[in-house]
Amino acid sequence: MVNLQKELDQIIKDSITPLLKAKGFKKQGRNFFKDLGEIGWCFNIQSSLFNHQENVDFTFNAGIFVPSAYDIYYNEPIPKFPKEYHCIVRKRISELKDVSYEEWYSFNGNVISDKLVKQLKTDVEAYILPFFNIYNTDELITFMMENKSWGPQGKAMLIIVLKQNGYEQKAQKLYDEQYQYPNEQYKEYLKDLANRIGLAY
Image (cartoon, rainbow, N blue to C red; front, top):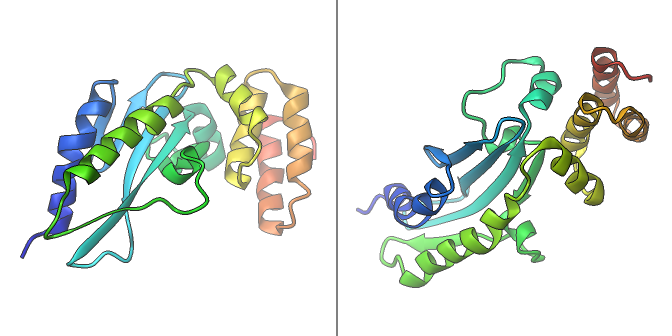
């Protein structure tokens, strides 16, 4: 019987890895990372939880990692190889393609089509790599302030980045907005964060 997970790893190796390694990414399993110093770029191939022996579905995730924000947000050592879920900005391929449905790629043991491989390469080149056009924290701040659809984790990290980069008033304004979030556990976290980075609550 064909091992579809091994087949997926081979697809990644043949169609995706060369594109990302050419751009300076390092690979660990199905995760890729490029360290730019102030920030880093993360890319992940995520398998569906509902995969079975006869079919495999997977998707693409991309993110922007900020080591200094991670350090404060999680209050733990910075990972040596950051993953997409560690990121301040996180995007699925469906968001990057601006489609209303979740984009999942699919193949089975009988057919790994040239069409699929071509689509993977095209999507990496047309959507994933262009997303990675943020090279420092100032560009990241501009991007995040212009696109405000971030969850609590992203916004809390943005508060940290704003404060670290001298945008005290913007950090406080965003903090005050986030403190209105109707979740007591999150509010307690924000209080602790304010004490650690020097904001009022």
